[in-house]
Length: 239
Image (cartoon, rainbow, N blue to C red):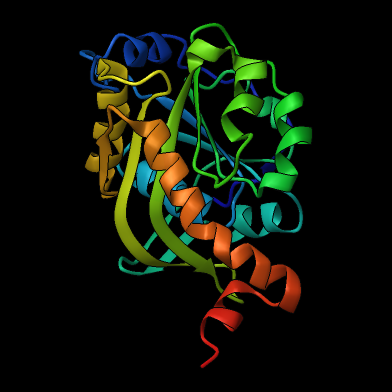
């Protein structure tokens, strides 16, 4: 059956957040799944959601129209490095993420403030952002609390095709870690969940350094983007 776009729902998975926080395998000893809410259904959000759902995690996606209806009709389709289709509930209301155990922000940075400020996460939930931006973690911390936010950086890439599928092009590494530095069992557990799903991932003891290093790598291209008003691939491919 084709799932409908859902405006609200009674979500579940209240034990899983504590299992992540305590460093226990996200599946849990009794096989209960982690509820993961993906904010944004562009290339990265679609790739992550399809992989986690295909691995058996309990995934919901928050997306805007018209993409929400497209995903509800056709499923999350990924091509490129892998070929897979996964069907998950698609929500247009950010409140649908409120009962998630782990919230992953894959929105464009300019979309984040309105969506994140509308969230009312349950106690024990974790959050991370795979964006490239200076304020990404602070925006989450303002809603989830500083201790509930992991740092993250993704050397993972793809593109949304004209038919709505996401072409998966780079699976280098997703790294997560404590923003204060050092190792943690919960960062290990989140990284392990992605690894099992087929996304290369690892926990880092210096996630802040990795986030800033990646951001600094992109800074030179910002000027070109502003001057040319072209998509990145256009000015990067110019001789």
